[in-house]
Length: 424
Ligand code: HAM
Image 1 (cartoon, rainbow, N blue to C red):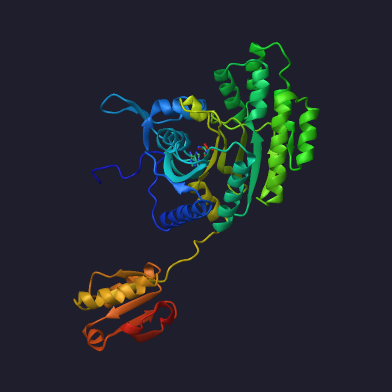
Image 2: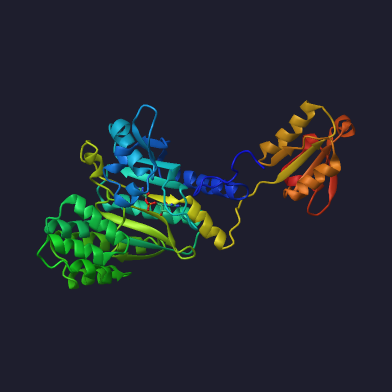
C-alpha cells in the first residue's frame, strides 16, 4: 500500500506524454502567434489578493474561487483568470508606457467548479490584453489573432459568437438599476436564466422590461438583419448605438473571414467587468467555449486608475487540446528521435556526436546502460526513429552505427559527416 494518496486532488490532473507535450506545443504556438501581433509576454503571480477579483469578477467566478488566508492573515486567492492581474500590473507598472500597451500571457487558472469533461479546477489560459485603445480596431485585432492561432493549430470546427454588453447595460441604466443588481442580472442571463433575470427586474422597476426576453430573438449572421432585429424588438437610444457598433464589428469580422461568425443580442458573459463588445469561441466538437473575451473599459478606473479603455481574450488551452484530439489531431513538426546506446565511456566522443544531431534539432537521448538489445527494446517502445550505437571500434574509426527502427536499415556513418537528413 502506498503511504500517500496517489490520485491528484479532485479536479486537478497529472499531465503526461503525449498530452503534456501536445499542450506545451499549443502554448508555444500561442507565444509565437501573439508575438507576431506585437504583444509582449508577462508572467503574473498565481496568488493574488482576493479583493482584486472580488471587485468586478462577477458572482459566478467569485463563488468558485479558491480563497484562503496566508500565514500573515492576508485574504488571498488562486487566480480564477488573468485579466484582473493584467489590469493590476498595467496600473502598477505599465501605464506610463506609450499607448497602446499590448501584453500576452500563458498561465494556469483555478476555479472550484464541478469537474467534468473539459471543465477542470486547474486549467491553462492563453490570452492577450490590449490597453489604451477605445476604437473597434483593437477588438477586430483580437478576432484575427484568434483566427490565425486556430489556423496555426488546425482547429477547424468552431463558431464565433459576438455580443455587446453595452446593449444590456444601457437598458438596465435606463431603468436606473444599481450596478450590483445589474451584475446579478447579467450573471443570470449568462447562465441562461433569463426568466429569473426578468422576475428580479420586475420587482425593482415599473417599466416594461420584457425587451430583455426579446433580445435573444436577435441572433443574426447578417449585420443589416441584426440592426433591423434590434429596432424591431424595441431597442433605442444608447442601446441601439451599441447594436450599431456590434453590427459594424460583425461586418468586418465576416470580411476578414475570422470563421463562422454570428451576433446574438441576448448574449452576456458572466465576468462582470465587461462594458462593450464581447465574444466567445464555441467548439462544435466539444459543445463548450474554447475561448472568450471582450472590452472592459472601466476596470482600470475601478481599481483607482485613470479611465483607460481595454479589451482582451483568453483561450482555454486544455479545451482546445481536447477539441483537437476529438478530431484525431496529431502534433505536427515532430523532431527526429535518436536513442544513443553507448558501449564506451568516451564521453567526449559521445558528446560530439550527440551535439551534432541536437544542433540540427534532433532529439538525442542517451541510454544509460551499455546494453544493445535492452536499448533497442526501449527505443522501439518509446517511438524512437533511430538507434545510434557507439562502441570502442566506432570510436577508433570515427564513426557511429545507425539503425533505422522503422525500416530496419542500418549504416555506419562518419561522425564528421553526420547529418539528420542523411540518416539511413
Ligand atoms: P472566461 O470565458 O471565463 O474568460 O475563460 C476563458 C476560457 O478559459 C474559456 O473559454 C475556457 O476555454 C477556459 N476555461 C474557463 N474555465 C475553465 C475550466 N474550468 N476548465 C477548463 N477551461 C476553462 C476569462 O477568463 C477572461 N479573463 C477572458 C478575457 C481576457 N476577457 C478579457 N480579457
